[in-house]
Image (cartoon, rainbow, N blue to C red; front, side, top):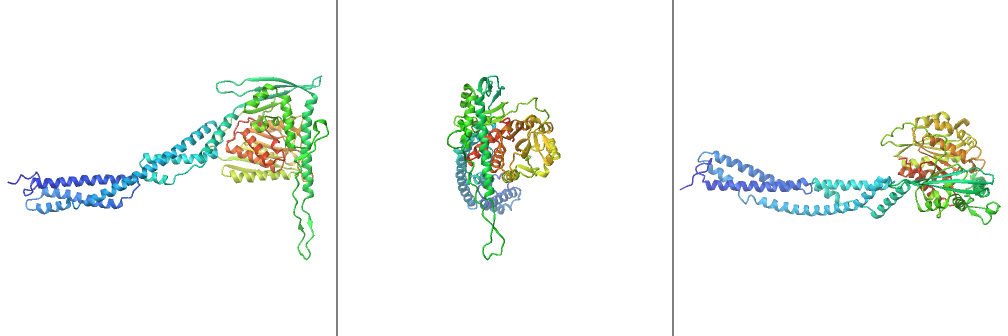
Length: 622
């Protein structure tokens, strides 16, 4: 007897037959769903192409859909019309038809295994990169917290850090194709250990030189016994959890010792002037001259090739006094001997020991402006080459106070280069400004804006505008100055039409916090075409009056010169200094590095020693 038909099925369809076909349909639907899920996973990860498999799956999906439709038709069909539908349904669900599913499953499994292998390789590469970056990012972040100048290193490391973060994000979001593609040719960090050590060194130096000691040197007047007394005060830097301490000492110098130091400075000045005079004479002697045309030539006279000027500043014969007797010495040796003598006779022993053992920045405040304290020499090196050194002027009142505007984020730094040559006798100063302009523009043109003022533009109206607007971050002045030793406030910059821009006026007008660089020589003691440049340390007191006008007017810092130098080393010094400042170095450290570089590049000159920084050596421009 035939079993009862299932609910909704025609009478001639047995329950077993129809139930078996429905079971096959469910198996087909489940099989298709599993394969679809695997293909979708591969496609979603973006690592494998499954277009061929997808085409087969679409056909199988159509079979399942059609089979379901036939089932519905069988259930709704009248007796006598079911067998054809049932045969068609059986044909759609025949295992032979679903052999394609087995083929797709095998293909998907192979692709899944390949993907797993590639992902494991990519993850291993990602972990390697993360380990490599961990140390570099750690030392870089520490440098950033310290304020170390690591812009170059940051430009190298930060993109690599972002690269690793993007790769990690691709893995978290299961963008496996993107991850594998990124790590097929991962970036390499060349000399990672050296780079990390370089960052650590900069961090250490920044942390060391951010600590600043103050050295006060006060000289009394000559007493009845022909003696000077120096009161020397040293305030040590504050250490974590402690306060700096004050150390006081007294040194008494006989008049002759003070004169010996003065004599060394005067001999150094004479040597500089003698060398500059010989250089000028050599240039005049080797200047191109007109030559007679060659026989048969129809052209004009040909210039003779210039002969290079000999090295005339490296050695000189000192004066004839007893202290100067002996074989000729070069300028750097004379400066070293002077610096060693100054340090030994003026600085008390306990302070000498502290300075020799404690690296830190130094701010010198003194009323003895004739001595170049930056050139004190101990421990085998000059003070200003060991560490950042600055001076703080001794003013009669407090600096002018005002509200400063915050600079706009991302704006370029503005440089103003001024060449003031109202008498037309400073061609070397013009070359200095042009050289600085061209070299800064070439290297830093994307970060700075540079404006030049030629001599005819450097007048009082324009300088009034420059100071009042406070629109410049750096002001570089090369040109004449007028110095008044008796009244330093009446020293000033010599502008067009011989207008003197007084120091006191600078202090009253200055706005903003510019970094100021003054390479200014006294009118009449200048580099000129018809005679050599002359140096004089005796201008230092009035020169400090000019520099202090900028400091007390609110300038970030002011660089002045112990003696004016307009030549290639001076331009090198300024350019190197600006480069280090733009790299993020503290101003005092930028000075120290520029000194060392110029000293190394120009071994026979002492341009490196010519400049003095007024202000806080630990300030930064950027």
